[in-house]
Length: 424
Image (cartoon, rainbow, N blue to C red; front, side):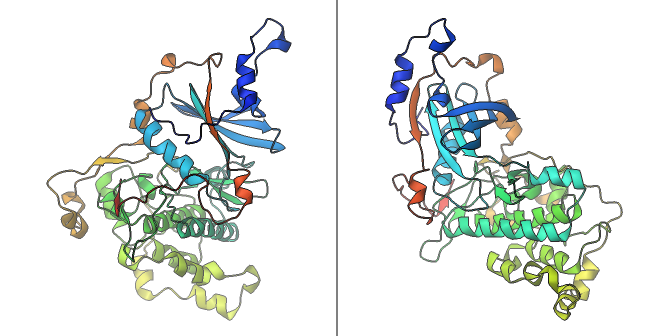
């Protein structure tokens, strides 16, 4: 298996630690790989079939960090060979106040450790669960932070492809920290004015754009914008706009005008922006348009001003007519974790037919691999090696020092050849 860590430099401290014989005296106990790097594990803050996230204290960073621990013995081969190396390659070049900061990656014979900035206050989903819904003041603040973070990524050729409430964490000052770049992709800037299309259908069904759900090559920057609209809807209404429990119904919903619940009360300006985002690809607002939207630009001190009244009345009669209330709307479960990754598109239906068809009954769902299926490929816990006694270091990547050079978002590793215009 190829190593997800490009640099295989081994520090003398690690060599010395593994050369020391373990004695019966606790003082002679061999330090773990993490301890040799100054990380001391604390409580678990998340767990899955093949990865665990634990809080740890870092001597070097003088505070708490989060460490994602991936077991090589239980993780699926696709994840180890494709998604994990891609995640590390992408995140080590990003530094923005609203992105979870990658600090270091350590690979051993047993595991891969990804050390990240620790978010003190949980996720946006936790806040929605607690507060039922989020007022527009906080929603605007957090949506602005998400917009600036995604703009930063897109300007550097990085697309996230899994924007959702679960992946928006909160720091100690209640600022958004976008996390989980497991489906992210770099080198996605247009070439000679031509966009680079993606054929990896990934993310979560309830947040996926119509073009992803139809299984046609798509421009991931615009799919990210769609997911941002779903997040905004979820914040202000406390529920998701689309029910992902049935594929055909989901296709019908994302192909129709957004249906707004009666409660809670949300301003017309906010609804108008949501309508502009959750729109067909040709008319979907771009990031630059979002930043110029009146609701986005609105300052709280302007309440009651003529500008505010104009913003609230900016929705047309046609939009009001189409954006009907749904008394019988059943809110979908916000805890959805389904992740998609297409290995093949169904035969017999052309891209053009998928693109033009609006009849959900005639659509063939893309052949998707969900997170549940990916975890099912993981080896059972009994097959893992839990002991670290024989764990040997393989290599590390540490952008902490390199990040001091500049904030241009360039990767600190060797540059890679850009992918073709259609990537997997």
